[in-house]
Image (cartoon, rainbow, N blue to C red; front, top):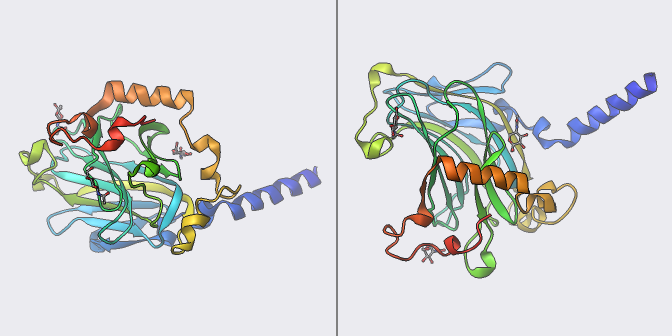
Amino acid sequence: MSSLRTLLAALFIFAVAFDPSAVNAKFSNSMYFYWGAHHSAILGNGDDLQLVLDQTSGSGIKSKRPFLFGSIQMLIKLVPGNSAGTVTAYYVSSSGDRHDEIDFEFLGNASGQPYTIHTNIYTQGNGSREQQFRPWFDPTADFHNYTIHWNPTEVMWYVDSVPIRVFRNYENEGIAYPNKQGMRVYSSLWNADIWATQGGRVKIDWKVAPFIARYRSFRARACKWNGPVSISQCASNTAANWWTSPTYSKLSNAKFGQLTWVRDNYMIYDYCKDTKRFNGKTPPECFKPQF
Ligand SMILES: *[C@@H]1O[C@H](CO)[C@@H](O)[C@H](O)[C@H]1NC(C)=O
Ligand SMILES: *[C@@H]1O[C@H](CO)[C@@H](O)[C@H](O)[C@H]1NC(C)=O
Ligand SMILES: *[C@@H]1O[C@H](CO)[C@@H](O)[C@H](O)[C@H]1NC(C)=O
């Protein structure tokens, strides 16, 4: 009995010691406010956060360190009620003019819902790859899990573990892929009423301010970027680099089924189908197998 307990304790210590998220998880340890700190807060034991937008400013937080590959988890409860004109952004991004970026943005609605879940990806400074979805739940009623996963083969956007979007690596065919720059994790809440709601026609109603988005359980189960040496280190196929295992290189049949369900029922915009916008020159990845 006691040896079993010792074994369990040892396993527990092993798990804690080797789960990078357990070491470096809390907002208070791993992130800092770069904007609007005067009215935002890290609460509780450091694992809860609120971002605030009022007439003085919005607010934003970023991770102290950059990452390359892995999973970035955030549980978010979006601004309730009349949130028209507000945007809650949650993304990973490198810096510089040829930056990489993987985005979730949540566009508010005057009637409370539905929200628009807006996604995009920039590679080497090139974006314009928007896809938009309706959530299949009220994202203001409770916390939901928004996870960005990326590895040498593909980028995946997950909502409550349902994949809503995939961007595959076609670097060999000349399409840039986000695998050479460390990216920090960001989240911000800001006034985007010049464009966010019905193309900017619906403005923020400051009478219902402050607008508050709540966060918890930020986890970066990801490879720490230590400069260019990480390009090969984070991509090398080792047990520690779990994101390089074959399981993560392609959606399972079950996950593919979920993705198809979302695309069939909740997708409201796909840049790959917007032929007018690109003047007939739809981006090349749209012609490759996408999942
Ligand atoms: C959030 O979603 C990711 C991706 O599916 C998953 O790995 C993780 O365990 C989920 N976290 C929680 C708290 O459910
Ligand atoms: C806001 O919600 C209404 C339904 O209440 C919906 O018809 C409308 O399309 C939504 N607006 C946006 C910008 O998503
Ligand atoms: C950016 O995208 C456009 C359109 O797909 C493409 O013509 C251009 O070569 C890309 N630039 C880079 C740096 O990848």
